[in-house]
Image (tube, rainbow, N blue to C red; front, side):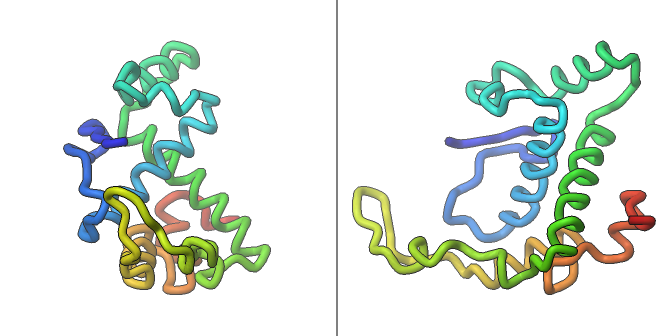
Length: 153
């Protein structure tokens, strides 16, 4: 499913085989989905662009009386995502766990448009950690925690 969301900095759909920009795209989508989950908004509202990010921000403001804008909305999603990661790292989750299941890495993929060539997973993960401002082990950095107001956790 091709996805573009100019409101959050995804101006056009990405080529699924594209490497450059994949980490930033992934982090933005995870932040967005985290805030949607927090607000209990169905992800299927994004299919067909029936509901925009601005619609969701407007609904939040109407319901709460707040004056949140899109950047604050997305920062909330980033905060939620990093808080979940902090919890998981305290339980021992690290880079060793941020990998595809073995069957994804070993099973032959056949069919139209499929390839057995895997993307450079190590590089993509390192790019992702850099975009998130996490350590190479996948732990949110002190600077990131301070930025998000999570440094007292």
